[in-house]
Image 1 (tube, rainbow, N blue to C red):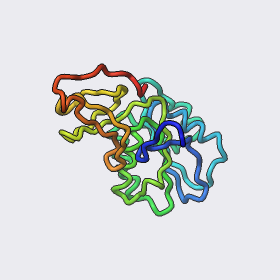
Image 2 (cartoon, helix red, strand yellow):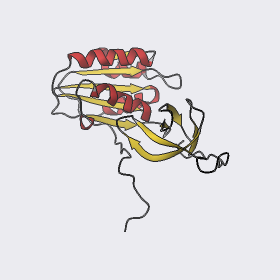
Image 3 (tube, helix red, strand yellow):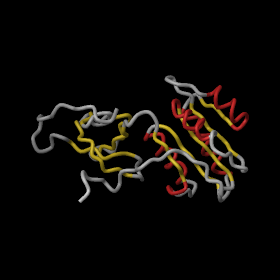
Image 4 (cartoon, helix red, strand yellow):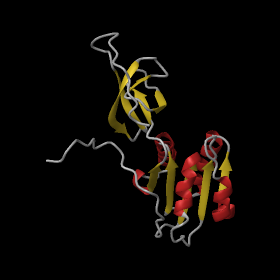
Length: 198
């Protein structure tokens, strides 16, 4: 018997690697995950066109390094809204065989997936590399709000303010882990939260 347990719905991420059979490549990254794109450029480069959509972060900005290796292929954005609008526009003109790559925190990775799905892109056609933080987006099953960047096993919902137990069950459709009210059976009995997803 295997030690521990594994939740089947929990995503497994790997390092980005070019898919050389693709017709085109679109790479999305945020902040510190710019390093993942730089590592991608250390591999044998594809012959097909590459577009990089990069969200510069306050904690790290790899714009200069990315432009030095990828030149005009890099488009830099100061806000997520601008990045998502550009990504949506790019997907509306993309053709079959375009491969998507995403590097960033888990919320960012699944936002890429959600937007791509609207254009018919399957989850299997997106390579994802989780970078820097293991913080989780948590979906409150009570008020349907997603609280981003949760690092503890118990979190306060930003919608209904309930204390939620953060489960390992992940919804690819919602791009978040499920959060259930921790004191539903014993109101007011809330255990101390522990940081488990740094």
